[in-house]
Image (cartoon, rainbow, N blue to C red; front, side, top):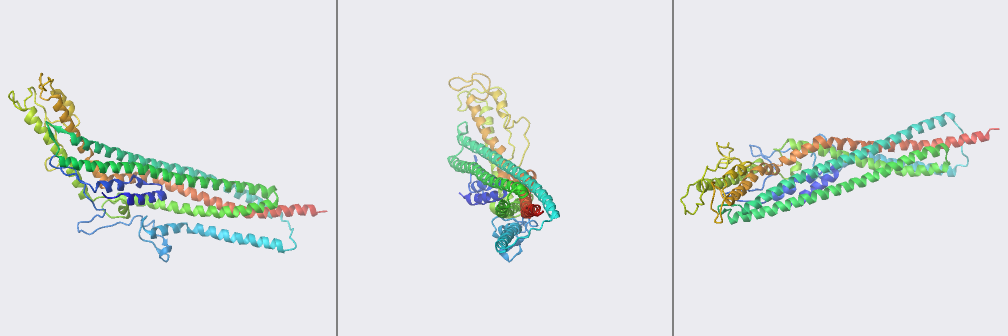
Length: 530
């Protein structure tokens, strides 16, 4: 059996950065298991899953490929002498990681310049304060008023930035949680359907009509596939929830850190304003040092969220392009292996064959036993009489082509109800004592066969969609159309809020010193007047 863990770990890595994980839906977890297992035979055939290719080929036999999110990911790559990266979205490509990480470099650089530059400025101010014997006490009313005015404006702007940050953070968290809930619901749907398929296969092992059962070899193959499906759904169910829990844990941790940062910056801005207006000058300088460090930390967090925002947008575009181009090879195919259409068609053909053969068995019993007027004492005689039992309709011909039901045939969904009218009462020897052509036992056996063939017919398209990634593409389309816009918008709100807070607290910090100094000089000037 092929292991799904490498693919699943790549998906988990992508989810941590993109808050999807979507891919935690993990077509890979299911496909890697199913594609490596075969059921052969039904009555004469079966459902077979064959190994597929993630690389699709054109008519010429040459593979075609698509660079995902090529325009969005056209960025400078610091690991390649700052040449432009042209490989598109590819979470397993280190050059993509370096190029997208570099988008956060400007803010990180600003944080470094601020930390070093303002630190040196503080050092120079301290040296001047210590070394200079006299201090200028010149007072400028215009500087005093303007510094107070701009300090008020910048403090209000910092408060607005905090509101933008907090609102964006909450909405981003809710959008992330909603996306993960959708992924889990899709996983639950997949798990439920696969377990239903497993139940159908379990039923097939014990299904017989008039003592005709599936061959032992087929039952063994069904056991293998049953184990595979159960392993797949258990892994999918467990890992999806584990990934959701882990991702939300990381998001909650980041959320708490940002809320603390926002609260500290907001408190710093408000406290700095009041101290610069009415507090001791020494406390203002202490706040300046605290603000110097907090601003650098906030700018670094801003650069991280710029990176996260770009990864989210890149991934959303990549998912959309992957979903819209099912016939070409992309970087996502290396993470989520999908079989090609030919293998998927073979899977569906085998399920059609099993359905057809089971219908043949049922109709053979109906025509040769139930509807036959046997002489008393014959091996297959149980005193059957009355109107003839209608045949079961096969949705396929022997060549697996779709066909319409013939007049008088019954379909899977209404066959049990129709056949119930032909059931007779039986005595202790299982012989009909009333008019009817089906004993209760034979009727139940035929119903069991209908459940098997009808179940395979019902879930055949689902298995095909699962194998050729149609199901996952549909999920990605939904994420792109309904979840990505909010994730992109609110991640942008977060880093905009962080930048606003950093910028305006930075400006406020400078004005704290200036206004506090002017206030001190103003007080000294008043005291010095005769």
